[in-house]
Amino acid sequence: MNAMTNLVGWISAAHPPIPQNTPHVRPGYKQTEVGVIPEDWRLTPLEDICQFENGDRSSNYPSPNSFVSDGIPFINAGHVADGRIALSAMSYIKPESYHRLGGGKVRAGDILFCLRGSLGKFGVVSDGFGEGAIASSLVIIRPKPFSLIRGYLSCYLSSALCKRMIETWAGGAAQPNLGARDLGRFMLPLPPSQAEQRAIATALSDVDALLAAQDKLIAKKRDIKQAAMQQLLTGKQRLPGFSGEWEVKRLGDLLEYEQPTKYLVKDSEYSDDNDVPVLTAGKTFVLGYTNEEHGIFNSLPAIIFDDFTTANKYVTFPFKAKSSAMKILKPRDATVNLRLVFEMMQLIKFQLGDHKRYWISEFQNIQMEVPSAAEQTAIAAVLSDMDTELTALEQQRDKTRALKQGMMQELLTGRIRLV
Image (cartoon, rainbow, N blue to C red; front, side, top):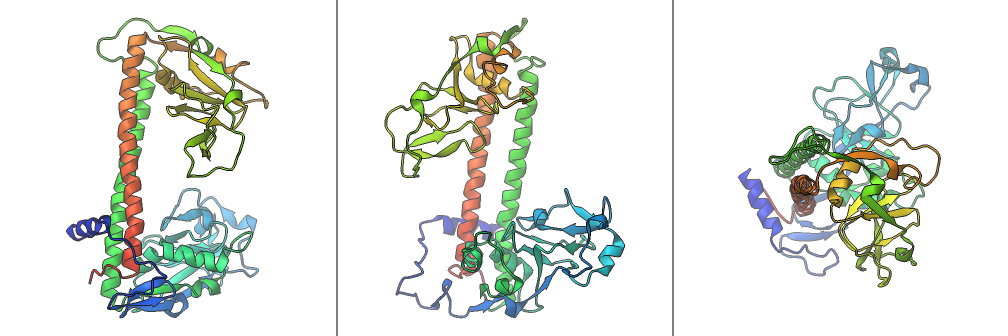
């Protein structure tokens, strides 16, 4: 782990990568079509060091009535991602259907690569996976013995080098896809020894383990916050120093709304170089950034509410709106803590019906029990502290992901040598 820590520190320092088009190549390195690599490395097509096997596409391919609730796993593109194979929502075929297949039967250590649909995603068959077969959207990659370490190939398939190869061979199509023959032409920078391949794979695997631990901690903290919300926002658990009955109020008694007409963006040519975000209450949230200087909403904080879907977001920064279907919600008076009301809205189970505007007709009439202004502020502060912790953990996780990408670039081109 110390070796990985030293490596992380080295890459985190200011070491700009050598531009691929630079005429200068430092001693011990050479210019290739994928960039500068060590002189003792070779650039080799995958077909020279791997075997490929497609799924059976003959009449033996499983028919709809071959699928059962429990049997032999039949893996498709939706089951592979991030180097893993997800058993959730797995499809299964009858044993007799599996035994009729002439190809596409997986073995431990196989890498399953998506050729279309989820192009570029892949998963590694674990040692304890057992029998299984692949759909026609996948191809099996098997490193040839004594040529290539499986872990090193997995790192390459996750890298920007591989993504550039995908763009080269499939990027121009309306619906990008590859054939096994195309995949075999992908060029791989290959260290001269398996020991060096293994060292690179181990270093990047350590970072993957760190990322997995960070993801697990974030999920745990989210669960803790959700449990706290269920207890604190319903009055099942009270904070120290507070007692007394909560008051039943309508959402419309707590919040007033404003139409977004004055704040609608006029030009949808967005750019990351601009400063003002254009928001939607839906999943996308930030649609882009505009350079428009007028009609910016800055009476903050506010809740933006999609009048047709009831999706909502809590906003603490100036913005412009995209759609007139949005309502901008504000507290009616100083006794209403907007953050607390927003959190309580997240617990509402609202059944959508006809395609119509909901705030005035139904949503504002939803009743909820509300504590005193002082207790509202105290509960909101607890939940806000949890959000702050979550945000810090997510930023740390995102930095680790970015660091891994930098490490892959440095290690897979031999700019840093571990052996």
